[in-house]
Image 1 (tube, rainbow, N blue to C red):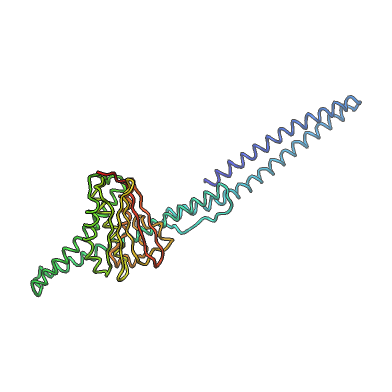
Image 2: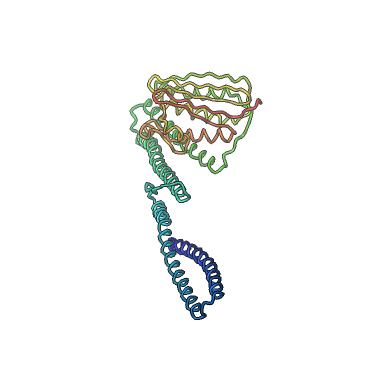
Length: 359
């Protein structure tokens, strides 16, 4: 229906233009012919001859006009089909996108409006395919992240309930595992909740006088035991001498997510360096590691929601692709920014910059 409508409109438009041109030609030729008749009459040509000549000319004009209209209509149909053919293909691609198939692309050639429309549709399909893949991967990851600790909690609580623990030490160990795994679930749910609030714009920043040095040291010391389990070393360098007005809770969350992420992907005997400096009303926090690095094609996406560079490794290390997305949201809520630099086999450095006036 859409195709027919476009063809009809284009056909009528072209036909109208042709008829307009023919009408102008007809008037002009008629005027010229009448002038010729006038001059012939002055020279003594008979009236019957002039009438016959006039009738023949008029019939020639009519036949020429009719032929021109048919020719114009045919050309209009051909041009319309050529113009609407890519639109029909685009309609088929968009219909496949509606049905959930995003890997079909529009063949694009040229630089006209239709070509740009095709490029836009291809870009939309690529984005939708990425979002769909990320969503499916995220659901699988979340299912795994919840299933693992819940299995531990269920298994060890059942052992305790049935009185199968061999000793008090075993009971304490089982309770410690249950406590740690429940904390893991709590952190996961908190991150999901914070990310959802940030997306809908309800995550608020509460600026307060904050001892930045204390916040950073607290997070680093809290993560040292975890780093030790990964055979990773933590180094810290803080050059902040004044209390600053920032959201202490969110700042702690930023540092925790950055350091936790770096430790998870650090190699054996790896080094994670945490630096914080305040200069010119800007607080800059940087976390660097000597890990495997991030491929160049993945680097622009590491702050996207649900994105994970190495899916299998992220699952094994406990990552969910939420930490860096939350860091970005918090930095932007402070009016700041976050940037990453990385190269394969040479580590990664993530830098957060936020405005922070002295308290």
